[in-house]
Length: 299
Image (tube, rainbow, N blue to C red; front, side):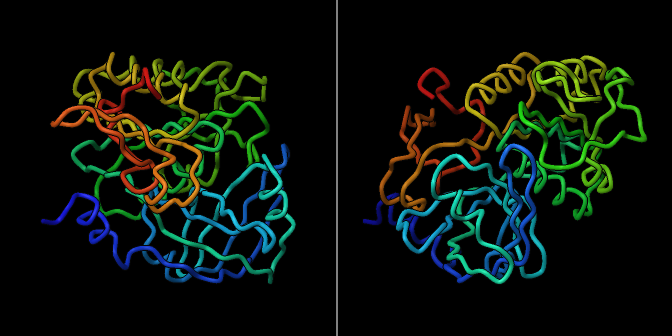
């Protein structure tokens, strides 16, 4: 008899690649943040919004680091990271022409459902990259989307703040700083922070989302699907927001992980399933989950 683990392994066979990636470019931003573009043709071709990669940061460090994919091109991926340890510090020192081992794409991506034509994208901190990938996927889709993105950070954003050229319903016109790249793709965007950055909403991402949702009529709210990524407390708040407004919600969970391919189960979280509670691995059963399935008390 075939076990669930065996079926899962068969489903993921030939979907994850290991490539010697060539670093194409690296850009540094305040707060020790970096955007690195890496040439990985197989990974780029297979990546979907919500996928991540497991990168060897340095030849002297055997443990890889999981990084969300922010953008993809014909033969490259981009990752955004903040230095939080020795591995990422060493990775940040690799410039154009350098090489890194990249394993990916890994994980269950977001399900972009065109029945919900008003996607609400919420990204906090290191949860911003997956939302950029979602926005990119939406603008490349043939469906009729009307997305709105809310991005939050307590350190300087890893992009230049620019004034938006368009108003957003329910948002004070003075809250006008945006990520120009997303708006060029047709995703209205506003930024939040408690750090007092110019043109940003002073508060949490969920506070600004509440203002926007309350500005919508019943029909428009019925077209909203929430997609979110960020620290677990933020995701719990997003799940509560979705529940208050009776909205579908997908979240990309963040957990420490060792193997990233389901072998060690070190990234397991408690999920409610039709058969009862179960421990599911963030790396391969996720990282994207239905927000209503997560046991937030145990997260």
